[in-house]
Length: 141
Image 1 (cartoon, rainbow, N blue to C red):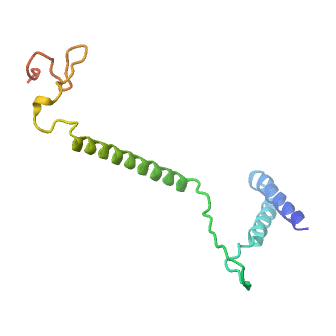
Image 2 (image 1 turned 90 degrees about the vertical axis):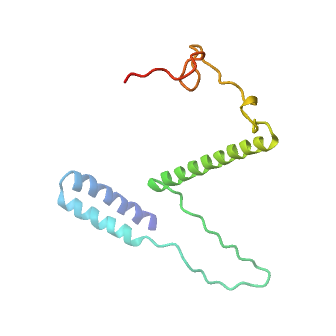
Image 3 (image 1 turned 180 degrees about the vertical axis):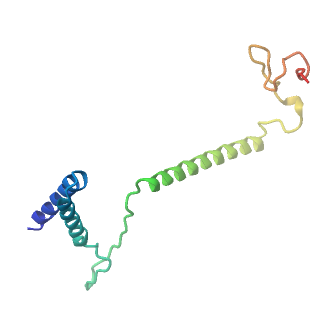
């Protein structure tokens, strides 16, 4: 019987929207609104408190499951996870660099042990000057 009433009210809401709101019929709009209100009021909330007596040897398990996130909340959670993962990657990279410096893999004493800058195919180094020119390029004033 309950399923029949749920289906009837659902159908009335749909027809109220279709024929009343979209079709312009005031009677169907009113019937749809009343059916929607009836469905909304008949929803029963989940029980918040349960009281039962426990016998010797019985156990209690209390669980809580968060509702799945959707919409803006889901996007914010996903962004927070990405930000946290990026921070963890930066931390690992930083630790690797520090560990390399402690082992003596990098030149800490002077410029003598450093590798010279590599030039690309056109003879440019990463500083912007051509290799072999010895300095910065002239700029227009």
